[in-house]
Length: 120
Image (cartoon, rainbow, N blue to C red; front, side):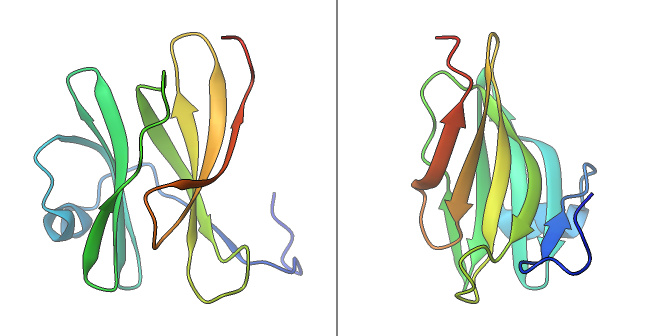
């Protein structure tokens, strides 16, 4: 669905769990999804009812700042959207009664962009 001649490369996340990515992340919560992009590792994790996204970059592990109301993330893709050499993580927010999309910069836990459908 992403054109080969697009200005920005877009790499879809695998929905499986890559054991090497999990080991690199050293998380204690249940891993729902984990994948690698070169030296970077990404995972969607859940602990009880609380879910989150975690990733490594330049030897650091970062945990996403949670979006109030969302109980986790499905990691959709990575892309260098702003062409600064770092990858942004594009995640679908898991909610009980709405949905949303969040874009995270690899160097910060705070969301760069957040869209919610507005049911609540």
